[in-house]
Length: 73
Image (cartoon, rainbow, N blue to C red):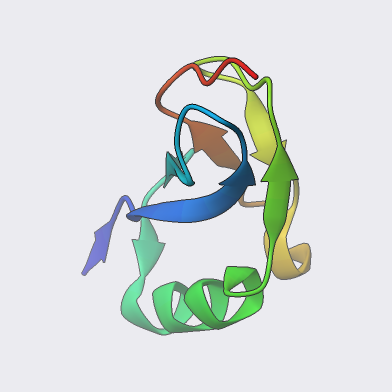
């Protein structure tokens, strides 16, 4: 079974500390675990806009993480 991963990534912003993101396509449970482990220490810089690809080609799997909210500085 595959599903779209929704999670949050740390962000440097005065407005909030976490940015909600999702994968651009459904992934397996094993890929979910790998991606969550890989992004645990990421920290992005604001501003970031809704639907912006924030991490491309995670773990070389052709999976992108997309912002689901706009965060200004």
